[in-house]
Length: 192
Image 1 (tube, rainbow, N blue to C red):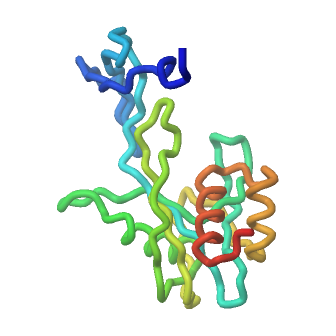
Image 2 (image 1 turned 180 degrees about the horizontal axis):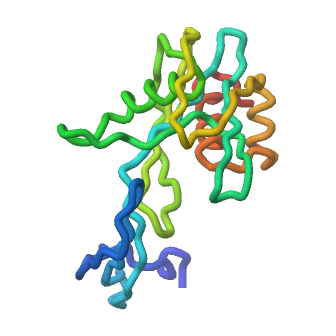
């Protein structure tokens, strides 16, 4: 049997039903009944999330502005790129690039003269549908940080090369930060 013959069939996953378990400020939890490509029907927990944007701000000197943020779910402080969830408005969901510009200024006190898309990632595809859009922010201008009441963080500057090293070594364990830093470094031609 060849390797191609042993691969699973890449058919569709079919939704059969859904029931809401919890609706919160940021996420909704549902139990979805689905038919898997192999024909098996299962109940799967799924966290529905509006999505988020995350930004890799790089200064003219080649430093990355990161935030060290108090994160309850991780049990402490986490070094990460600035990020936030897309806002819902009366007109729909905020565009990712608008969210990125807003979060950059709110969390770091900087605006970007140039905001370039770096694609998107699934945050935790095993149980959630959260997409995180990544951006490279350059031509930074200092303004004023405006944190929300539940945001406890401070800005840290790291040389891009050190941020790359920490992303690769595991010293920075946050997935969006690892992906964002490496994609930004590649776009800037700084990834070996």
